[in-house]
Length: 371
Image 1 (cartoon, rainbow, N blue to C red):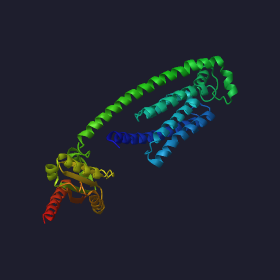
Image 2 (cartoon, rainbow, N blue to C red):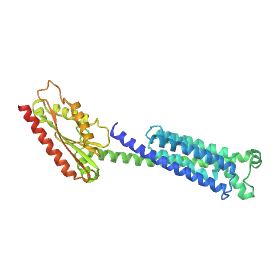
Image 3 (cartoon, rainbow, N blue to C red):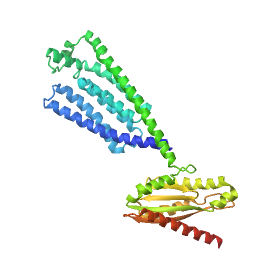
Image 4 (cartoon, helix red, strand yellow):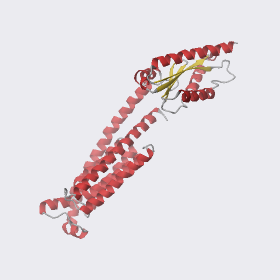
C-alpha cells in the first residue's frame, strides 16, 4: 500500500467512525421526536409518525451495528452508510416532509467526507430520486407539505386515516402544482448545494493530501523508503519518553564502505535497500523503522516486553542474512546493539546504551573475522 493509499485508508477509518457516531445521534433524535409526538407535543398523525420513525431508526441502526461488529475496517462499510442514511432521509421526507426535507443533504455531507467520486455519485443519485419520490409519495401518505398548508389555512385536521379522505382534498390539477412548486424547486436546490459541497470539500481534501505527502516526503528516506532522522528526532522529543516501555535496536551494516569501494555504490545501495525491505516486514504499528543515514538503521519497539521484542529481533536477524550475493567479493553483515527500559523512561539514555552496545558488537564481529 502506497503512502497516498495509507492516508486515504486512515481517513476512511476516521470517516467511518464519525458516521457511526453521527448516525447514533440521529437515531436518538428520531426517538425523541417520536416520543414528543406520542405525548401530543406535535400534531402529526401517530400512525404516520410510527411507521416513518420505525423505518428511519431501523435504517440508522444497521450501519451502527455493522460498525460495532467490524470497526468500520471493511471497504464496503461506507456504501452501507450511504444507502441506509439515504433510505432514512427518504422515509422521513415521505412521512414528515414538512420538516424532513432538509435531511436529503445528510447523505451528501457523509459522502463528501470520503472524497471518492463513486461514493458521492451513489448518494447524489439515490437522494435525487428520493426527493422526487418523497414529494409524490407524500401526496398520498405522511405529513405532506400540502397537507400542512390545508390544515393551517382551512382548519382541516391532520388525522386523515385513509387514502380516500386525502384524495378528496387533492386532485389532478393539484398534482401538477405539486411537481412544479414542490418537487422541482427541491431538486434544483438539492442539486446545487450537493454539487457545490462536493466541489469545495473535494478541493480541500486534495490540498490536505498534498500537504500530507509533503510532510511524508520530508520524513522519509529517499533511498529506502523508511522514516528518516528528522522523524526519529521528532518522536524522541515528543513521543518516546511517554511510553510505558521501549526496546531500541541500533543496526549497522558491516563492510558497506568496502562494498562501495570495490563493487560500486549501486551494490552498496542494493544492500541498504535489502535491509530496509526486511525491516518493512514489521507490520506492527508499534514497531518504528528508521534509516538515520549511511549504514545506520534503528528499530524502536514501543510498549513491548524485553523478551518479546528480543525474540522478534533475533528471528529477524536470522531471516535477513545473507545481505548480498555469495559471489560478491565483500560479504556484508549486521551489527545490532540493544537496550531496554521501562517507565519512567530516560529515552536519551536508552538510545546511548543501544548505540554503545552496537559498537561493541561491531568490534567483536570484526575481531572474530580477523582471527
